[in-house]
Image: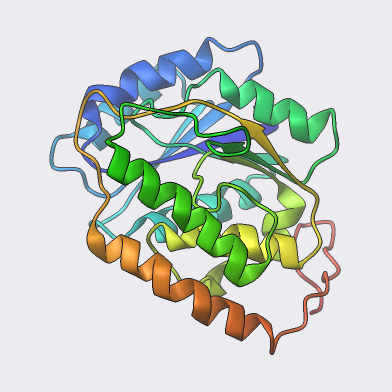
Length: 255
């Protein structure tokens, strides 16, 4: 068993998932993989189940009853990773928009440099996005600028979904109180980690739009993020952020 696990939510990713798993297993650092599948009608979960037979200790699968949202998929994955004593827990898309080789860079940023949260950032060094229409690039970029202005959080890519957490971050954040389910979930997780004082570093990546399958972005997801940031900031003004004591089992002892 590795000390690291990559959580990959899936919905209709049969065209991508086998190649992605193979790419991750070819890396010089050993990663386990957890697929959280939302009952994909294209049989993504069935394909992962078949692959598990060849890697029973390294491929893990949570099958959910329906399309329940990105945020809840990751929350389920985080609980699984903490319960199975992983030290480094990753988020990654299933569609190759994130380069699997960058997992190693995120891992080394946390392990070798001592950061608690490493973010694969599209905007920390200019704009590094390939094959997006210009309007989508502008919306994404200025959404992150907007988040910075409202929250004061010094993160250039607030909606980034390619990350490595040290387990202490996820043990500290009260995961079941995270409110957002779409891409606003990514903002809330970063903001909460920052408010708790964890060390965060963005590393530059090149984000490439998917070649196979369909994007899950929608206007509803965008507006949840836009309006949710203000509500999130207001709530934070009435909340105290201090780290609880974590016992040897990884459970919170106090708030």
